Length: 329
Image (cartoon, rainbow, N blue to C red; front, side):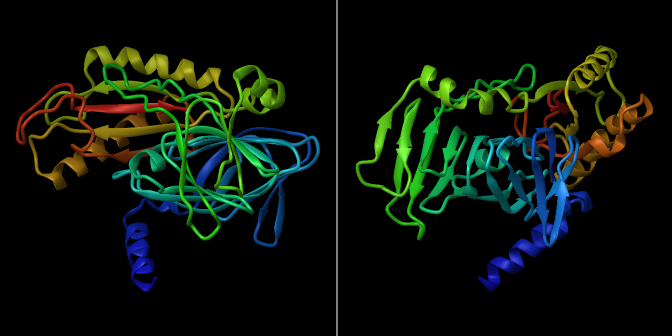
C-alpha cells in the first residue's frame, strides 16, 4: 500500500498542474442537482468543473450529464448519489485510475481512455458489487441491476483505423471475488448475485425505461487532425482550413471544451519528441485562444511518438505522424 502511494505521488508530479484539480465538466443539468464537495454543498451549473472526490446528487426531478478529461461520459438520473471517489489521468501516457461509487440511483456510462488503456483501471462500485470496465457502454441501476448496451461506434481521428470492441463488464462481489464476465448486447446483470444472474432485454425496453437518461448523454467527441512541416510547429496550408471547422463544431455544442494533443514521427529521441509534441499542442491552443476561444476550456498535451497514424521503424520521418489531434467534446 505504501509503495502504491509513492508511485501514485510520482505520477501526479508528472502531470500538468491543472490535472490535479479539474477531472471533468458538467455539460447539462436540470431540476434539483448539486455537488457535495467536502462539507460544501454547491448548486450544479452547466459548464461547472468537477474535482476528485466530488459527489453528484440529484433530487426527484434532477439530472446531471458530465464529460471527463479522459473522454468518459456520464448521464445521471433522478434520486441519485454518485461519488467520484478516485480519478487520476496522465494525458501523455493515458495511464490512470477511475473509481466511481454509485450509492443510490441510476447512471448511464460510456467509458473513456482510462478504461481503454488498461483492464479494470476503471471500476464502478455499488452497494452489492464491483464492476471492472473496459471499452463499454452501460446503465447501472442500484436497485439492483445493470444493462450492457451495444458498443458505441467511435468517431476516430480522420484517417486512423480504430477497432470497436464488443462491450463487456467484469462483475465481482464487494470483496473483489466471484468474478463473472457479462457479455452481449442488452444483457442484464442482477447485481449482488454472481450466480445465475443474467437475463436479456432489448432496445425497445431499454428506451422505454431509460430513454431520458440515454438521450441526456453528452454528445460523442469529434476528432480533427492538423499537420505540420518537418521539425516544425508551422501548420500545412491544408490544415489551416480545418481550424475553421473546429470553431464551427465548438459553437454547435453545449458547454464545449477542447483537448489539443500533439504527436510526432519517430525521427527524434523520446524526450525530444515528447517536448516537440507538447510545443505543437501549445501552438494550436494559442491559435484557438487568439481566435476567441476561452483558454479555460482548452487542454494541451503531448503524446510524443506513442500514438502513430502510420507504423514506421525508429528514426524514420513521416508526414502523417507529425500532427496535432483536436478533440471537441
